[in-house]
Image (cartoon, rainbow, N blue to C red; front, side, top):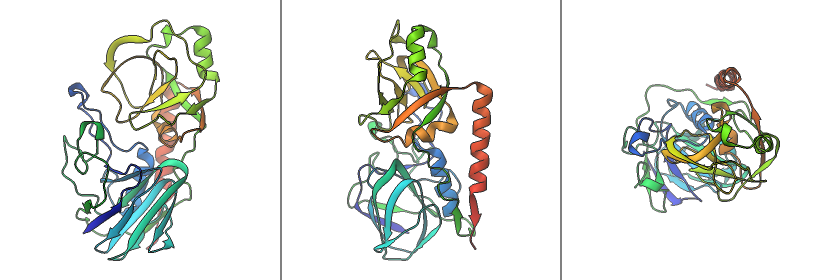
Length: 309
């Protein structure tokens, strides 16, 4: 089964849940910016949670299906039309051969995920089909989709029912973002640290998959540069200009800026869906709260999906 890309959208890439284990070789994990929405889309399409799909950013693609298919769209709020008729999100949808799917602009949030039953079949690179555009790895030619590209579906395994999710099951607008104190918290002046945890930041239009940049009152510190060390998605670096960068899955394998905080895994979707101008505030939590939040996220995801047939 193949899909032809007529229009690619602003930045549409093939992603899965990433390629961990290669940072020591300078390769970031990549993978879905909002893994919760990505997993939901796959569950609705009848796939394993890690099957490759499309990450759609701000403006979606125009696709033509050459064979019958089952798809699901989940994440930020996008207008979508199948053969000119509105296509619902967060549920399985049957697509007949010859149909055209247009995913327009995001109304809220930044990223949505289109899952295709059987997954998107592209060659794995270092154990993952995820696109790392800066390094030219994975996906289709290691880059965002272009007009004329073809996507092939993998083989669907066994029967899968049509499904739906609770409306708004996983989309998280920007707001309060829970984070733990970072490994270099001690290099920041006490008043600057207090300012970080109390002020409201705005997401910058300079943000991308490498990191969500924040605008606000700069955070002063004694030493912005540190010896390079390993970093993770969600690490909040404070470079010399004092404006935070929340690292994403395409961020550097190592970082040389002091890290004041780390966003907890359960709240990474809030960062992924912060569009330019959205406001957010960091709320400090401890390890036990971070673990409890993750367990609650997993419970909510499991309970949000129900079979239709």
